[in-house]
Structure formats: C-alpha cells, structure tokens
Amino acid sequence: MKERKKKVRTKQLHIQLTETEYREINSHQEKTTCQNRSDYVRRVLLKKPVTLNYRNQSLDEILEEMIRLKTALQAIGDNFNQAVRQLHTLDTTPEVRTWLLLNENRLASLLRTTEEIKVRMNQIYERWSQK
Image (cartoon, rainbow, N blue to C red):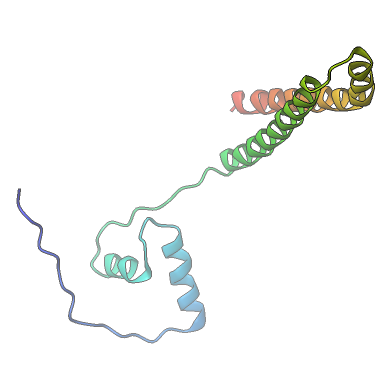
C-alpha cells in the first residue's frame, strides 16, 4: 500500500478584512463541512468544491420534541421502578394497602403523563406524515 505524502504548506497569504467581512467569512465557513477557516478559504480561493451542510428545520424541531418526550418517558420509568422496588420490600398486607394509598397519586400522574406523550407523538406523526 502506498503511503500518502503529507503536503507541507510553507507559504502564507495575509489579508486584511473588516469586522463585517471577517464575520461573513466565518458565517459561510460554519455552513460547510470544512473543519477550519483556513481550509474553507483555501478551497474557495482555489475554486475547489465546498460541501454545504443543509439542515432540515422541521426535522430539527421534531428531533428536539422527541428528545423531550424520551426524557419524560425515562423519568416515568425511573419513578415506576422506584415504586415497584419499594413495593417488593413490604411484608404485610396492611403495608401493601398503605403503599397503594400513598402511590395512588403517583400512578394517576404517571398515566396522565403517558397519555399526554401518546397524544403528542400522534400529533407529530400526523403533521410529519402529511409532508
């Protein structure tokens, strides 16, 4: 297999820019796959292709919403596991009855939140599938 020889860049090109020009170049570079400004400027000056990153705004919004829903589901699962662990430590019927009474609100909240997540996911699905 041939070894690639790394190009050593020994020549420098210095230019003066206004603050506006500098920000504009940085703004353009951030929208590309170029890792740094010098790579971006070199490609533009040498008329080499520059690959742009395109972001789908609606997809970004859906991903953010799904992350929030995932976090909410994780919290529900954690709360449920804690409650079940506590239930397993109980020995007598009166302790279980007390546990059930104390956790009745927790269960109602868990079911409400789960239903809200289900409704929101259906809304997202309906909106996305129409596009």
